[in-house]
Image 1 (cartoon, one colour):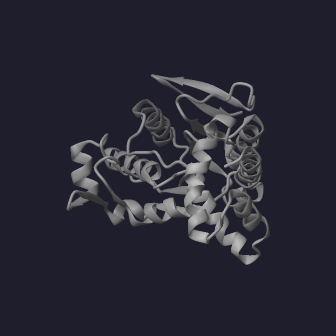
Image 2 (cartoon, one colour):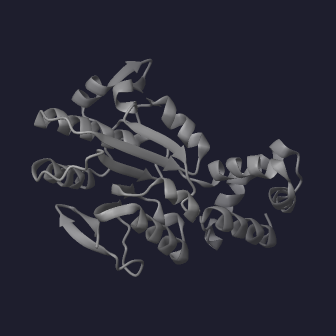
Length: 274
């Protein structure tokens, strides 16, 4: 991949998905896209860029493949326990103070990858419902730009690596083990709605309004400052007043948004819409 080809493809990916590949990530972009040249019978990355821009109906199909290739799907169940403990504290407060939304709690996992995060949240909600003895309605939405990841999420079949942080009691209760794989029970899956969404497409947020809580963890790291601000502004508009946003434990809203109030929990921070 020449420098000119890298700039062409880097800018195209940024325009369409908001994902920014810095100069030192050229090798990563090249390695991820090289296979598509072989699949399409193209001889250079410049030809691939031309195909993406001027391939007509095929362009839309190829964009889906491109999104699958440039996204990273590193995730697992019950990732970063302090953030999940904060989530439970927020939900328990809603249980006890009588402010449960009439239509049910609406929680959105933005950038859900292969589904571990939204399914974790569903399990936590089911456990809280059982512990209180007063089941409350809730819906969890999971969205991602990778259709391949979403297809995997919908199957609900996970390897040992994905469930490595999961309590054995939870595994036994909500999964069925078969040939070393863990199959998620339908009782969990029924609470989660999965769909495609490009976080850089402001119009697509219209489907996700009046959210009580949004998880967007380890997603902002793939955007530049302009892209981060755009995503956070859209997530802000998607939340109800006083709604909560959780981002990655190593991420920050410093210099990105002043619309959120940071709330300190043991080992972590959550952000509340002002």
